[in-house]
Image 1 (spheres, rainbow, N blue to C red):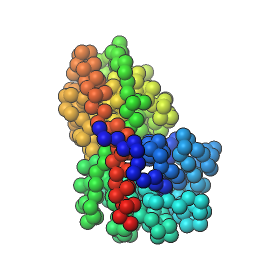
Image 2 (cartoon, rainbow, N blue to C red):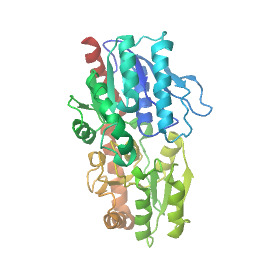
Image 3 (cartoon, rainbow, N blue to C red):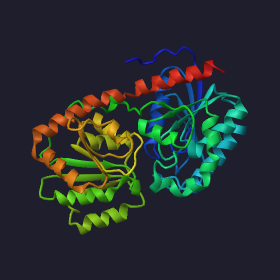
Image 4 (cartoon, helix red, strand yellow):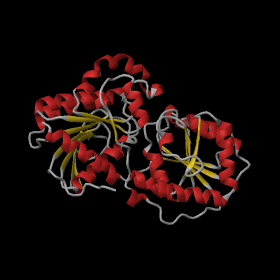
Length: 387
C-alpha cells in the first residue's frame, strides 16, 4: 500500500458537509475519517457543518477544526429540506464573510447537492479550486425514492456545480455511472474507506445464538420491511436480530415485527454512536442490508472489518464489496426466498459462517481509510499545483 505519510506540500483544506458525526448518515463518517487522516499527515483542515442540539459551535478533535452553524436542523438522523437550505444559507455567509482567519488552498465538498452551491460561491470569493465527492443522493436518478421529487426542480441548476469543479470523485463505480448519465464531466473513483486498524475484529468467535444486525436510517431506501419478511421465513431457525437506528419508518417496522410475532427475537436499541455500533457489530455474526439504493456502503465495509458475513442487496455499489460465497451473498432487494436460502446455509453451518466472517475481515483491508486519504491527497496536490 502507498500511504502518503509525508506531504509534498502542506495544504489548508476547507471541508464542506451538511451533516457530520455524531449526526447524519454514511457521508459524515467518511468526511470525518478523511479529515482526521489529513490532519495526521500534517495538513490544516477546517470542517464547516451543521449544528444540532447541544453540540458545540466550535470544536477541535485531534487537531481537526470543526465549525458548526445553526441551520434549523431538527433531527439527528435526517436533514429535511428546510435544514439543507439552512445549511446552504449559513455556510455561504460563513465562507463569504466569516472565514477570514482561514484562507484555504482547496475546498473539498461532500455531496454536490445541497453543498455544491456553497463550494462554488466560496471558490469564487477565495479564488481557490474545489473538489466534489459525490456519494449517491446528490446524483439524479441514483436514489429516486429519496430525491426524485426535489431533483425535478433543482436538476436544471446543477450542471454548473459539476462543470466548475476542479475534479469530481465518485465513491463507487456505480455512482460514477449514474452521474455520467446526467453530467458530461470527467469523474474519478476513490472508494469509501474505514479506519481498518481501529475497527478490525481480531477475535472472531462463534455465537451460540447467531446475531443478525442492521444499522442505518429507518427510511424507505433501506428496505427494512424486507428484513422482517425474510426473518419471518426463517423463524424456525436459531437467531436473534438487532436493528440499530431511527427514522420515519421505525414505528411501521416495529408494528410489522409485532404482527409477525417476532418482537421477542428482534431488538430496537435506537440511534447509537459510531463507537457503539462497532461494539454491537463485534458481537454479531451477519449484517443484513436489503437496501433499494446504495453508493458504497460504509456500514457494509465496517461490518466486514468487524467480522460479519454480508447479506446485501444487489443495489448500487453493494456488489463492489461482496465476493459471492466468500464474504457474503448478494440478492435482488426484494428476493425474500433468495435471502432465506442463504441465511439457512449460514445459520445451519457454523463452520461456514465462521469461515465467511474471517474472509470478511481480510477483504476489508482493501478499504483502509489511510489508502483512501492518500489517494485524495494525491489528487488535491495535483489540483493545487496546477493553479
